[in-house]
Length: 148
Image 1 (cartoon, helix red, strand yellow):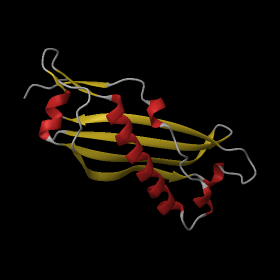
Image 2: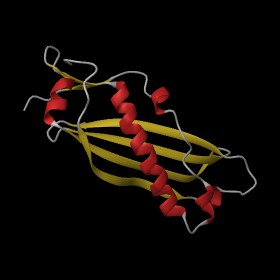
Image 3: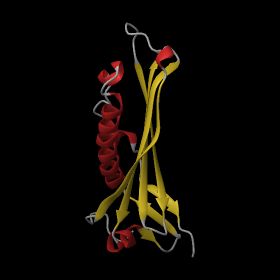
């Protein structure tokens, strides 16, 4: 990576609901609810895209009653992409601060998708909470470059 403080140019290319399910039989209105979160980053080197996959499970006891996973796909402009490349190790290194920015966009998107899918159901009150995604991302993401 050539510079650490370079502004990254990118555009949101797509949004996909990867998973969505309501398990009404696992829900009781008076029970305490827990939340688990999963965050993944995937690389499409050919198209210079980074996919952010964010999932949430709303849980009571040990049973999931509401599950959602949304992905947002970001196209990185060529000049920004080249700043991520470490030629000596044949790796692509994406700074954690930029990953946190993409994850924050994906969090808001997931919140909206969840609301739209539960709007006319009793589950509308379950909202993706505000998250400090920077705390979830401990280090830069390193991807192996595929020689084409």
